[in-house]
Length: 336
Image (tube, one colour):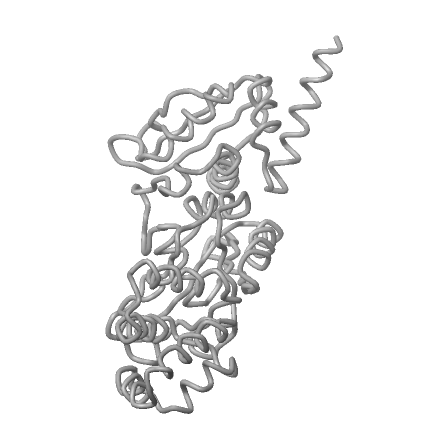
C-alpha cells in the first residue's frame, strides 16, 4: 500500500526558520519548469517571487540547477506563487506537488546527509514498527533547548539489533550506532540509535509512532490496521521479537506475548490475538499477571507454537533456536 503524499507532514511549520528546513533532492527539473513558467510573465515576476520566498537569485538558481537541495517549505510557496501568477487550477497545483513527491531522490535537513524515505508500506517497515512498539523510543523533542531527532531501539543481544539496523539501512539509507550499557546489578543491554530529522518525522507523522514514553499506551498504528495481512503479520513478528517469549519446561512448551497495562490490556494485545486467531493460531485471552500491571496472551500447545513459527516466524536469534527445538519435538512425536 502506497503512502499518500506526506511532504507537508515533514514540515512542522511551512514558514519555519531556514535552519530547520527539510530539503528535497533531485527535484530540479520540476523547479526549473515552474521557474520558466513564471519567467514568461516577465522578469518582474521573478523579482517578486524572490521577495516572496525571501531568498537571493543565487539560491533559486542553485535549486534550478540541482547544485543544492530544495527546502520543502520553499518548494511549496514557490508552487503556490506559480499557481497564482500563471492562473493554474488547484488540480494542476496538486499534480505538480505530487510530481515533486514522486521524483525526489531523498531528504536532508538543509545540506546534511541525504536519506531516503519509503513511499509504500512493506514487510520490513511492518516488522520495524512492531519491534518499535515493543522496545523502541522516539526521543521527545525539546521546545526551548536543543532539538534532538533521535530514534532508539533496545535489546539484550547486539546481534538482534543489527537485524533492525540492516532494515533501517535498506529502507532509509542510513546506519545507526549501537551502544552497550549495564546497570549496578550487572544487567547488560544494547541500544541502537538513529539520528535524522527526516526519518524522525517519518516515524512520528507518517507511521504515527508515539513520541516520549508509551508504556501502558501501546497501540497499533492506523497504517498497519489498513495494510494487507502479510504486513500485519510482519508487525506482529516485530512486536513478538521485542515483547514475546517462547520456551519449554519439563511439562510442556509455551509461547506468550505481553505488555504492561494498568486495569485492562492496552489495545495492541487484543488486536494481535484476533489477527492470530484469524490465521488459526489460537492464543488465550489477555490475562493479568498476578500482583503486576502486566497482561499476557499465551499458549502451551506445541502444534500452535509450530503454526505461529510457520506463519508469523521470528527474526530473533535466540527465539528461533527455541522454536526449532520445539518444532523438532513436534515432528518426533508425529513419527511415533
